[in-house]
Length: 275
Image (cartoon, rainbow, N blue to C red; front, top):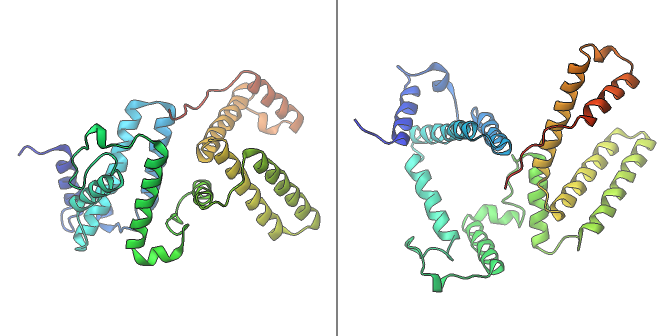
């Protein structure tokens, strides 16, 4: 039987979940148990994009798609919804949120009926999203920050929370004032350290990180991507120290620093940014 690749994938997933003839590991999974894998796959997609590796990106997108099919299959088994419902829901959402591109039936609007002002398009997008939140009732009661998922990585969530707040007028006028806030928070960390209060130190470190994320947002920098790039740079340099001296870990700190500076002077590979 000829089937599309997505249909084949769904059939394979159903077979893997078969209680009698499937894979014991797949059968044992629950919607909650595979969430960590879903998050991991999303990060691996981001990594492939940043490295500009098309082959790896193709494979990682497949792994992420498997997570969607896996969750949809378990929901279907529970009588909640199926993969087609998932696909139909995002189709409806895309049409609804792009009212400047499609009419209510999903037909592309003629050019003379499309707005050309980006600000107007953004405002319409936010209005439609607000209407969606209101339709969900209970979530709307959580206020303007209620739709920012708690499960997001802390840096990403901080950026989204601060951007939402800025959309309601609660923001610094410019990046220069955020810099002052970063310095203020750094001083408060030092003060908490001087007082010997570990709880206060942790709280002030959090405030400092939040201020840095706000600074990144004002500068148009993705804080999560910037930190991943910094991680990759550090890892490359650290491995470079081992290449220069396999026993570097036993050296005095001064000698380790000299090795670090040698590696640093030799440069490091830049992590490719999203275009």
